[in-house]
Image (cartoon, rainbow, N blue to C red):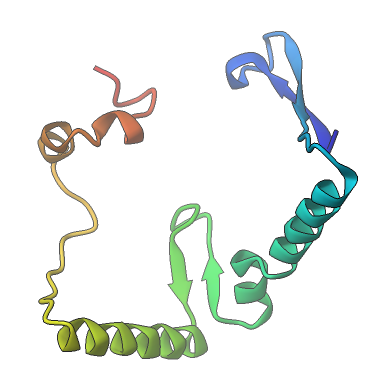
Length: 124
């Protein structure tokens, strides 16, 4: 058992509260220990924590959860990575295209992506 958490059925506090159990299983202790060490290392390297600590980006609820506001330091790192990737893609004969971040609903229905993004407000 790794952890437990409470959750309301379908996120509604008027419904029954349930218990979430997070667990894993391995054939021997050595494999379990190796897995737990990898999990701890991943926590240490979590980009959400490191990015904030290093002052690379900011997330503001007014903008939206997961929508990154890049600081000057973060924008510099991002640009360097984009330049590196662009250089190597060009060397390998690829051409880049850029698409909008948002599109009409019909686009997502046609592409088959709509069910992955729909919310209670967009169900049809």
